Image 1 (cartoon, rainbow over the protein chains, first blue to last red):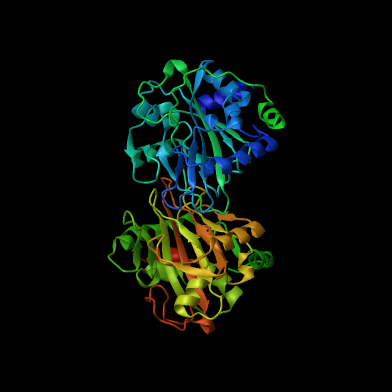
Image 2: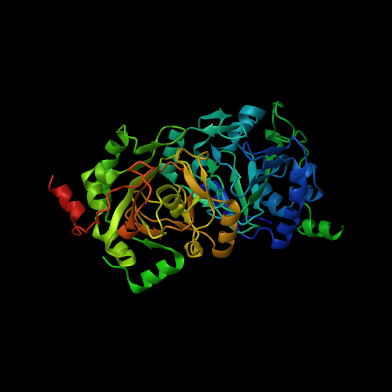
Length: 262
Length: 262
């Protein structure tokens, strides 16, 4: 799969791109069916909410599960990513972010490069974050909020917040968020399960808590050019993988054929 | 002002009614201009957020401010209320609920009658809650979520939650919320400043935290039939006023003329 010229222009201008219907209900159903077992594992890569103990983020999934191993090489994700950042991309991080019904906490205002640069020594903000919605994402169950165009101003000042939630995060100061939103406004990324989403490493975003009775799971793979790899290794492998082998795309039916073969 | 037959039917069916453009930008501007001074008062009727100390709810405002004294008698609020519940209505509670930008906390799933009945001994769920948006209310700054039709099932089981936020609240259990939402769905009440909203005493609702850079202030007056008055007086007057004098409507221009007279 390739992005159109119009889609590439939109990504360059807004810093994000929503791809409705990227994966079929059957494909999403297969991926969702893997989650209960993965979430039940006692694994440091399963990060739980501070209150309640529900899984907030399950990481390193391509090393823990055969279907997610295929998903990180799926041509509908890897095709657009290679178009935008070249062919030599390694898998930096793989996760499912869950906002459990009633329980799921907020993610503060941040952009990913602040963490990638400060923690892992990634030189440039070239990584791409590619999402697949595994539940319907609505205004009610904790969608991501983006400041479109915020990526273009480059890395904003950020500081490490270890207090607000169970996941330490390099966050953007409120004054900066107010200024950026005043200039660019806000959009929320919503859509049915199967929707895809791409955004870059300096895109400022956040997401509210989920007070609705609907779970909200989103798959995320971060792909980074091999030439822009990490230079520090202080975080665990599941937060930034050390395997810099460029990933090659699999056939388009790789999820369904893997399931059929079992 | 009177509701149309269609509006009354909608209120009976859904349990809530949105009234776009109920107050003009000039009227909203006058009311908003009163807030900083009221919020700065050291008054037990100003209830602050647990973290941050921002005012979450400023109560008893019709006894503290001449413009809010007029607003509780405004014909665009009192007209519809008298149509729905008869002419003899007293002012039970008056407040501005604020969700400060970045700071404003959630309100848990609840309906007002659980508090009115358990705390104040109100016999029947006849009170009406009438809102006026004093800021634009969007999907981003903590709008109210309603379960339309939930009012029709009557009072759901509720328990007193003193833990989640700084305001003790009789809340509805998660299983009940899930069942009601499964049956009826969810709607959010959004609209520009000046929008009006009416809902009844058994309507189940909640609102998420405000992580956006936009404040969100909403005026609320609860009107209750005199024949259905409180029978217990354990809460402070500003949470349920003891003055059962029926309120009579003022002229339609009462806000602007009061301001012009000064």
